[in-house]
Length: 502
Image (tube, rainbow, N blue to C red; front, side, top):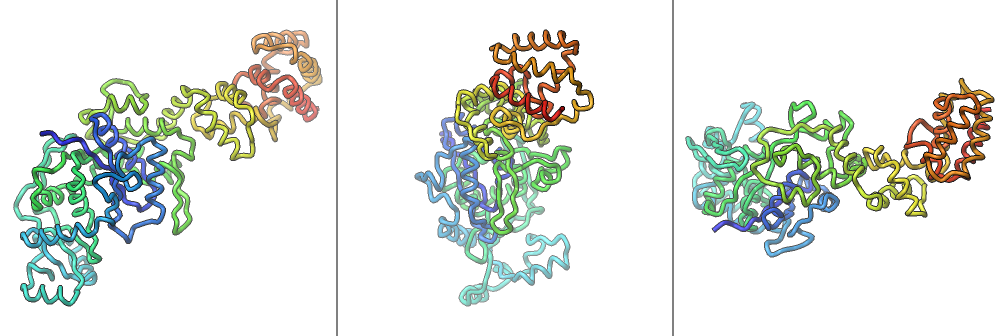
């Protein structure tokens, strides 16, 4: 009987959430929803040395912003909890002891200094088949010596005993048949000296306990797969083992290696979903949300990094992604991250968004910069005029501020050298006409008619008019701007600029 689909996203609360992590969560989520399954958030916090205060709450907030809602999690609960590994600590030791009893694992009493000495002696030192019999462990010590060390409370770790001269093989749903030579796999630590499990033991025990059906994770975990598969087998759970899906890496823009936070810092774009402030150093790492990305666009662009629906289509909302998603359309090859393409996705989502949806986001941008918006209808009208010009939500501040407050600075340097008294006379007359028109087309016709009467080319007057209203050389149609501002405000700005020019 086919397992009910149950998948999990299992981040470690050690810092900001990388866009690769969000994509892993997304692919888990899409697969679960496509197959009427369950999406689980499990927090893998067994490495207490790397635990960062506030990181779990940050991860939860990132997923919420993205619209990736867990069906089971530490916050939501569920029938397979606890959903934090640190709260499952007591369950892991029994599995380590079972593996030792069955000959599949062993106690290792080597100190940190002894291991460091070995690493200095052998630069590529691996604790495994070739070296384990030269070390201080329960394979080289007598039973009496082992029991004596345990009785004394001597610190130890538990290591898996990887077999020699075997191949561990499995089917990956993206990569097909995958095989590993066990002679190249070291004896990973399963239980640490503090009694906490390592990722290797905990992930297998928890996936089994939570009845996970499919494991979606990045391909950087492929080298760990043979250890995990051996654990499924050694613990007697081979028939319950989930199906494997190792996702392609998200690569640097040049395709040369995995995209890292350092690359984002170097190239000037974020790699985290949201702003992350390191609680120890206070260092701020910027995120896509605060840069001005819509969550729908962020999810859309991540889905297309390593997946497509088989067509040339690029724009999908979450419901469409769920309906279209399939594992067989995930690429084996890594996907280059292109920030310009990411902004293109955001631009598309902004262009096609209803003004009412954008209004609270734009109002928040304006409010953060001291501009309060009282009229929602007016705000939506402004948004409709300028949204095609905005690639990021933060662009709305520059593109819309002049609709709400007069410009503080006017870029008159481009028009001052060619300014004439005739142009002043033109604007003085044109200002009086502004109250007589209610369409941009009619106002433009009057503008050109007066320009001809003043024997000035309309083209010489258009840029000054824009700068008078906006403060700079940007914005939508200048006659639309004038009508939206209203005659009184437009006249006031014209008069202010004329004083500066004369």
